[in-house]
Length: 265
Image (cartoon, helix red, strand yellow):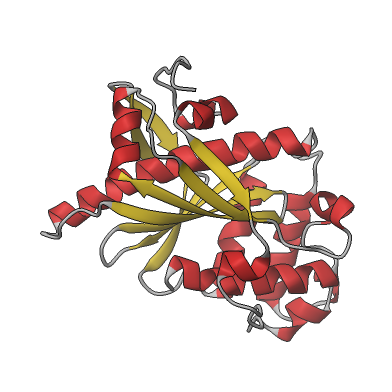
């Protein structure tokens, strides 16, 4: 792996090859291990979201809007990337991810220093703490929802990891501007969305990894990224069903609730 060719690539061009080139490995974990709790917490959203499947049968305007956006995001014939982002922003508002000075941004421009050059690392959605300009969470959408799931997960997670490295760098820049010492390491939470189906990630980034990518060298110490795929009742249909069926929706929302502790909100 140390002899792999490394080149200056934007985050959107990262694939599994870049993960191999920088000694980044992924490990799948069950819910208890990943969320660091034996039982997922109950979600505190409006009960209509938990017990009514379709938007037209809901009475609350905000719930109808969320479910309408869910339907748009699940439409694989719709090639507009914005539909998944719009749903994610609305969901974050509903769950209390974005609240007060915690705000969501779409298409936020970050930069990645790689192989001595500066490249783009544009997020699909990110959660930002405006009190200190710290990036709390990154969301990357799979761009090939109607293609092979295994490949789309690999590309989506590689791009998410590149964005997490860029976020680590900018978080340290913001800390320095606020007269705080930079962090030697930070776990950046992330989500890859396939339609409305999330995969949750914990991405540890260190100054050693950051330096290896800057100089295009192979880090001796591996970076281990943990991820969790929600365990829905029909695993072979999870990508197509997403959060539409109520049994899927209830479980996935509990995963989102548990993820708050990882994000630190």
